[in-house]
Amino acid sequence: MGANEDQEMELEALRSIYEGDNSFRELSPVSFQYRIGEDGDPKAFLIEVSWTETYPQTAPVISMNAFFNNTISSAVKQSILAKLQEAVEVNLGTAMTYTLFEYAKDHKEQFMENHHPGNSATPVANIISVETPTTAPSSKKKEKKEQLSKAQKRKLADKTDHKGELPRGWNWVDVVKHLSKTGSKDDE
Image (cartoon, rainbow, N blue to C red; front, top):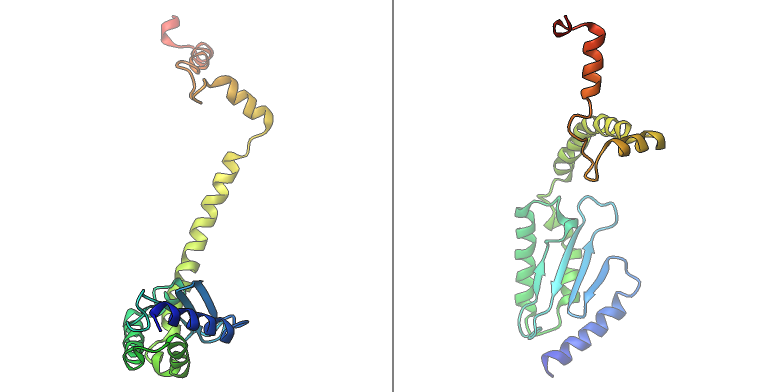
């Protein structure tokens, strides 16, 4: 059997095994993601397996670069990938995507023993709570400045040229009126 026939058979098997499983996602006919852990589980992680052209005779590409895994330290990710790579070497030459996903599910606690979700989640919460008060007042001030009535908008449009700039000397009349009312030394 050729590599393509093996891939087609494994693809069919994966589709039938994981039909209705929300943790499994087929990104393409040669790329799959599986979420290890339940929704809301702080120790859940996502594994992506992509087949090469010569898979299963050669190892698939295993990745944990999904956004879902951002709270996991790179050391824990490297540890998980190293253990999965060992499983790949044992299963080389056979269909192994299902085996890798099941291996990860069975060893989830061991993989994530050095992961401390409370530590990584706390700084994010602090950043959000620190930024929220400082950004809210400035956005309110901008909203008040931008809200003009139709009459105000028309008046502003009449004063400005096509670029939105006021013409040179637009306020000179006000200066002359002011000087005439206050009585300048030049008038004497």
